Image (tube, rainbow, N blue to C red; front, side, top):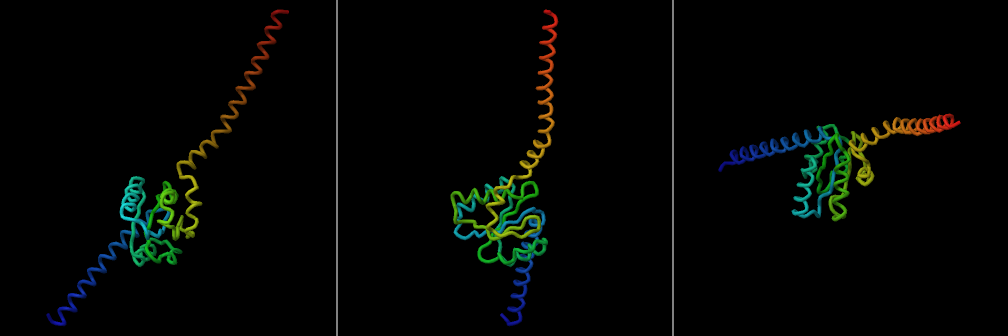
Length: 190
């Protein structure tokens, strides 16, 4: 094989490899753009069986979880407009994405996973509504209620003054009615 054909063959492989990487970057950027929260996790020490079980559980709950090379993640984050996480892209990195419906659900799932596997899937960094947070904030985010819980609390708070007013009126009204009835009976007997 001539030197020329070897160089040509290598450039075709490099070009094809670049195209494949760009496809991965574009797919990651699309997923990240649609997410309300981004969690970078260290997936070293995770066993295949644990990883498979975790992926199945997360998929059932609608959470996107992927592992990718840091360079590809860096490009995808940049393309999606997420900044401030570059310093966390070292070592084995996986990404977990939270939806607008419940951006804290991935945090709760990781904390739940830590109950049986405390040294696996350690949080490196988090992006929530465009703000970069330290990985240590994972525990705090996991304690926050989801969108449904917040809405139910708001509805409960909104309705409670009306319910209290009705209870007061009914209570006071029934007392007055009872007093009028007693007075009426007293007048009839007199």
